[in-house]
Amino acid sequence: MEHITNWLISGNMVWITFFISAGLIVFSAMQLAKYGDVLAARTGMGGMFVGVLLLAGATSLPELLTCINAVAVNEPNLAAGNLFGSSSFNMFILAILDVLSRERRVLRDAYFKHVLSGSLAVFICTLVLFFLVANPVINQITFQIGWIGIDSILIGAVYIFSIYLIQKNEPDDVSTEMTPEELSAIPSLRTGIIGFSIAAGVLILISPLMVNSSARIAEITGLGTSFIGSTLVAFITSLPELVTTISALKIGAPEMAMGNLFGSNLFNMFGIAVTDIFYTQGRLIGEIDSSFLIVGILGVLMTCFALIGNIVKFKRVKIMEFDSVIMVILYFFGMVLLYRMT
Image (tube, rainbow, N blue to C red; front, side, top):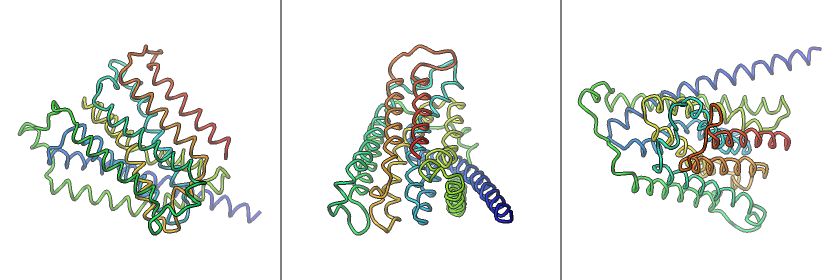
């Protein structure tokens, strides 16, 4: 009886720790995005580029820090589940936006502006999946420099080149100028840098708590780190994307909203390369379970359908358009398949 009581107390503390740390992470990430907007306004960068790079990087920082802490406690599948699951959930957010904006079509508001960033997100995710499928062959040869896999180095190079292409091809009609009245209402660059740094510092301190509690939840529930990482952890670390994307939509900036989501998917795959630097036991991709092929392919399929919906005029099915309905079905079907594999 005493053993059962101790287990319940331990289990309750794990859940309490998880939700408190998750709440702090979400709040800090929202502050990170807020001060990221200040930096964007003060530096005069374009809305689409800000969404794809700065805002996406800020809201995706919880995923990256969670992954770094996950491999620090030797939980590579928790890290992979977080990144792949977040990419799928980001596309699920587009369906949520469709419900919130019944009067106008979110995807076609941004029109062709994000065909490039979405296509690059598909490309880099497919590249990661290629390396994952090729693991049996790659593991038989020397495919790393020190402990870092050459595959991670290639993924990092593709990300950097993708950002260059996006910046180079940003539409000329994107206005970066603000009126003196608008600029006066925005905090100073110094305030933006300080606020951004403090929020990032809190994330660095809190992320290990959520990782450790997530690993314990996976152990207690018996669901495994792959499923917990792809669902619960991915959902928590993706909440900043959800909040900032809805905020961008409310202020009439659909290009920034979509840029945040496609850019976050790009950054998530870049996160695998960065996390590999901290995984000193070998190639990170070489340690990822093959079950993540389902989650990764799911993210690719949903991103492809988002790009299709960016162009094709689908009919609305009650409160959602057809492409959004398909993305919702794909997401939940993929999660059910992953659950069945645990």
